[in-house]
Length: 225
Image 1 (cartoon, rainbow, N blue to C red):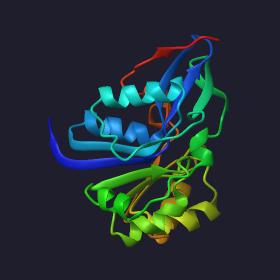
Image 2: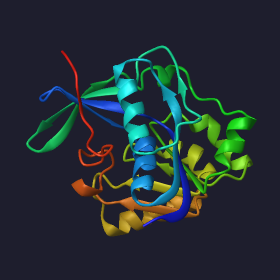
Image 3: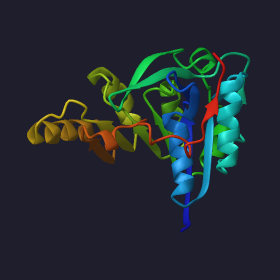
């Protein structure tokens, strides 16, 4: 079923390298958002971010193109793509380390007026706390662009206070499974910072962001060690 909705993921793209099976999967919060918007029937879906120029980057690019996600405003720079080393222990995914976003962490995406004109074509722009997009959020607000933002389960109160005023839809995870009263109190506090819609995910494996099932159409690529 198609919906007359346009969605854009702005920020992170990575590969997760599963050490025990020598396979890498594409992903990233912003990338996953764009892919699943497309899979859920969005009429238009795009990703906007920075790629490196290595095999990991080419794998993510090819995967997004295969999913029909628009990449017109992406940049490709010389350097490592974002990557994390992962394994699975007793059925749970365990992160072993990362390159902190690779080139994307060093060369931030700075929005100009032409980028903003492009982004205004979309109903919602999604980003998150691993996207390195924080300093661009005031530009999005000033341009009247609707912003969705994932605070995950590890954002500090100070981070919320800095970022939430520029966000329309706020999402975060209750990783430590607080009581219902504590969850409601937390939701009320997030609401007071400015978002129009706010939602807390419970600490259920299926609800956690970036789980094994949340990869781009399960499109693996082997690599040599």
